[in-house]
Length: 454
Ligand code: ARG
Image (cartoon, rainbow, N blue to C red; front, side):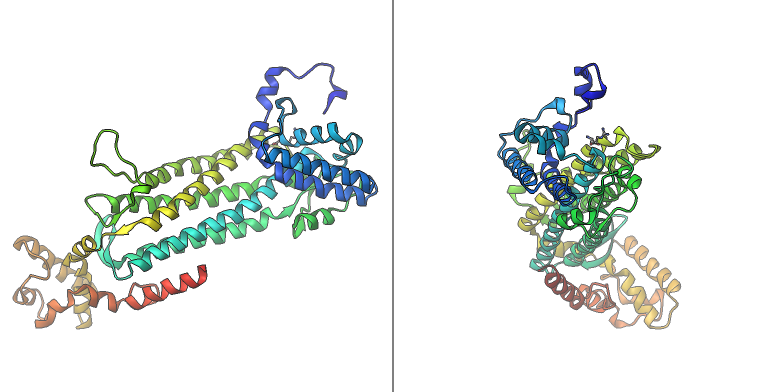
């Protein structure tokens, strides 16, 4: 491509070192789409006849279907996807192919390809996130009357509906979707026409290219357009947050599937056995998802570090953005793709949940509220119930077995009905504030999400 200036061939060692075709080949649909739009602008400017432009379009489409069918041979010495496609096009159709790169640089071309690629991946991710939310909502709905202990510090805290716990993740994934859709706005700006750095002396209709490719606007500064990858960093950080949410859900699933909790039974199809211990059934989907989160964080850090300190504008360093971008997208898509069907086959062990939630200490705060309702300041009520819990530990009983007499020794505000407080259903029914898990609220939220997601 640059043979005019050079007397020597590129060293084979450099070719191998600098090629990106081994991984950027997957940008081919976007490279072709972008080149077709660019050729339309060249035709409009009178730089291609309509026959030439048609030859370019036909040639590119043919190359596209050969790549798709696996019959196209990529050449390492042609470095990247842009030069592989352009060189092959020119070999096939001659001069019109050689005109295609007029007023274009690989710097704005690669910026365009990445933006087109990321835009379509945002849409794919949104669909997968929505499917994941539906799987969580459906699992909650199938088990809508199951109450489990909620935990803080991984210590039993207060009872919650299992569905309420799942809906917490639905909220998190919704914010992830909002972040993606916001990031998509900054991805969705058309950079072609920026050239290598300073546009071109040949005037092309950038808006036409933007319209053909479905971009609502064009970049406003040619140096910025070829120089920054902030939109990709933003997406990688959104992906890191998604991975973090999935990793926490994974940890919950791993705990729930353990013999100690045994709240959830995963299906055989989404678990693995042990090569040694015949009894084992391991939650590998969740463990792998938790593990892969490290990769997704690492890719974000790679890209931030890659861009730090680069002088304006394009630098070859930036070719190193692609593997990190591809890996984060592939990893998160794969995790979402396997997690949703795993949840769809998961069963809840209702009896075991009922047993765990029968722990009367889960309602210690309800007892404090009982005293508050009888006029005791909350701090004092907290201390009284703390003593009751300590007394129970001494006597080796639960709060529900502590005699009324003992309660009354701690505070005269306790009445004969104190034990009635220690009923899970009563406790749940009282939690009616917006966002709290009363049965009515949880049912409404399940319905709201089902409607929103359908
Ligand atoms: N393969 C390159 C990349 O991914 C394309 C742009 C090359 N530009 C250049 N001036 N060498 O960044």
